[in-house]
Length: 465
Image (cartoon, rainbow, N blue to C red; front, side, top):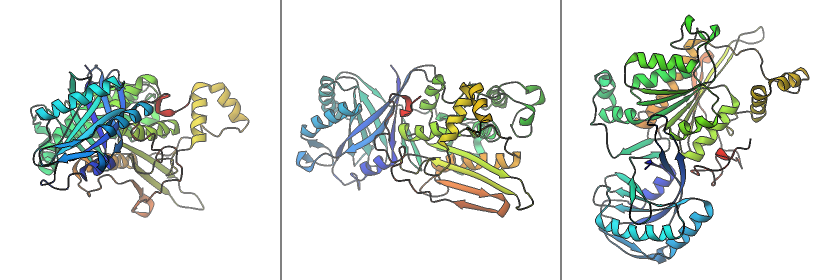
């Protein structure tokens, strides 16, 4: 049976937590609809995984509530039947949520008995299961999915995803203490190291920013790393791709980084794909990740991870640099950017980071190079200009800024909101700017209620082509 984990988007958890104002409150309940992510092959375990993503919270009408106390909550099943119908129409998995105000989160014998009957009804209505989540008065959370009325699978992890990233795990690996991580334990505690060791993190692009990101993740103790990059090392990479040597010229960047991480001996499990991010066999790795770092200057790749964050509730941390050499009419213009993407925040389209026209040109250049060159000669496309300037100190600095955003999500070290939406570092004027990017009216990605937490859809991420 597939391993199970559950993602609850922060805006949904806030709504649910509002049902539990304090430990003296009576038990409360709500319905939920979940998107489903079926991972045929987890790249690290080799087995199947099933991830559920919260898509919508549905209140139980007050007229359907029968009784509640600190030990129980009961309600009419009329609204449950309506919710099952909505789940079927939308292709979602139905779920129920309730609170245990005076204790930690667990499934009681009464929960088992009640949910068994609801799961039987859900199965009869053709649902792919029935999800159940419990929130304890101490802030603990647990979840499971019923497969009919006689079997269920407990979630190995339940993560709450927003600017903060909170992870609730059933079993930790014996709280393993790694002595090489003792100094960061002294700052953030053993729980920080435990969280990192369980994380699955994908790095898209392994050049000037992606290579230091990958090595920093391993040094921090991230347990599972996936590296995606089509390119090989060339001579111009030697000044900024960490770990690259002259005798690596012609070798895949992902292979070089995998070698360097394994030589560290720090316990990170590294898997690689020498391919474009939109290759079909890379999808399982993306869907299985807890964080994704976008370290590519490729518009096609950015469009994909932009949608990934919203469909699957996976935090994406995107890194970009723009460097313009000094000229007669102006001085140096040196800028670095880190943008964090989560459902509920403006996306890369709203921020003007991605260019759809250039993305189409990139696809043409890859798949039909002769046609691309013909159109370029006729000035129908722009692409393939001279390489952009790059200096290792600047690319490495922005890689550190990006990884620190992941740490902020886990630890709250720079505020309760966790990750900063967009930071611009302007070296030439010695300042940082924190942009308040506004959502574009009608944005097809971050303004779509249908895509938020939708999970698997056809075509993948609702992207044509």
